[in-house]
Image (cartoon, rainbow, N blue to C red; front, top):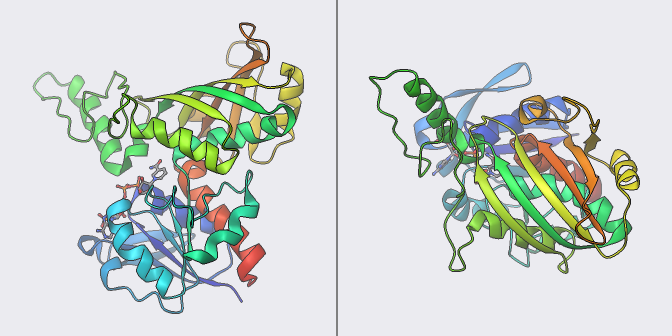
Length: 340
Ligand SMILES: NC(=O)c1ccc[n+]([C@@H]2O[C@H](COP(=O)([O-])OP(=O)(O)OC[C@H]3O[C@@H](n4cnc5c(N)ncnc54)[C@H](OP(=O)(O)O)[C@@H]3O)[C@@H](O)[C@H]2O)c1
């Protein structure tokens, strides 16, 4: 016996990947429902070698469904996730709406699987922000060995992190650059993204940081350890899929770069590709479609006593969203629901 699973946002970047990953990992699905907005009613989406028709989230009855993977953004989530949860369906949500709610666990299964049992307060589990998810997978095993005091991170985030409209905007602008009669229009991003970088993701906060940067701070604390200090600069770059991060870590205890490399090699969800030669590191185009978080350029930071630098790359639609959500569903199945 398997699960009756709902994917809400099935026509979007993350929802489509959720369907792919459920099929790829052979999640025990008895029945699947793909939901989106009314305008997508009947749109066909792929689930393994099948094609399923999209239903309207607004009129869907969640009664009798076990797990709902939500990827519809905070607005619709606020309206529909409590309805699903009240109907007895456990919601695993990709938006930021519930991430900081003390009654909702925020889970990266490689880091804090024990938090799964907190799901029952609201019948909701939150999935972290894409840039946080890949970073904490790398930080957690290092923290367990040498206790992290402070992290300085700069991100290089792909346009797919801004949804399918973000990908369309990069595509259209790139074509327009080569066509002198076309106007370069921007709607999704605040400035031209083609052949450019934009040091601004999500809204500005009073202290001059952005909400995306704040999310990395707050979520790292909730997932790993509230004592870890994080300062972030989040930047959008003209890459379709795959987020990269340059991470500087200060530890309480000394951690040698070779030991850090060995620890990361043994860590779940991590793939170390770190040769000190031309091309001996991973770039975003190489991580697309992969489950792993790739770590390269591991090296001592000689400007402080106990410091390391590393480069961290992952498919933001997978570990940053859909894969992590499916891993949470697997954890929920294993530890709590116990079907399949
Ligand atoms: N992309 C990432 O890297 C990433 C990472 C982590 C978390 N997330 C989060 O995941 C969520 C989805 O992101 P995305 O990148 O997949 O966005 P997207 O490509 O723009 O897709 C949005 C999906 O939500 C559906 N939707 C929107 N409004 C709806 C409504 N009122 N009722 C029902 N369905 C509605 C859309 O359906 P229609 O096609 O019918 O409009 C579509 O299926 C967001 O909360 C985002 O913050 C994204």
